[in-house]
Image: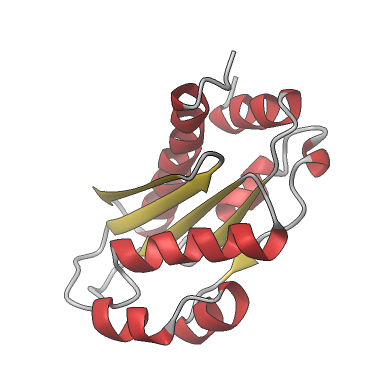
Length: 161
């Protein structure tokens, strides 16, 4: 079973909604989750926030956070997830911001990715990962890490099977 199938089935079974705010993954997370039959019951929509302006306009990331920390940061990843969760009133929201490559961004080498996750019971977590490979590989590895974060959160919150 693919990881997105496990995530989707858990969310559907427990009637927990999810959204995403994606930058470097450009909707890949939600696209893979949408492959799960019945996911529309818990996936109301998602955001692709590629630019700093879109992060602010669509999910409310404060401009001062972007100016002070850069778009590739723990602070912006958390704000993206929190903003997406608030915008669609979901139980969970995951965010992806980083450098797919091949060039560095804001002093961060290609493969630097911050993944944020917020959920019920004030659950909030951000991880920083250093991934390798070309743009496609970095994006896919980011999505897989995000899926695993959701599974881990379900276990941490004692929601999973």
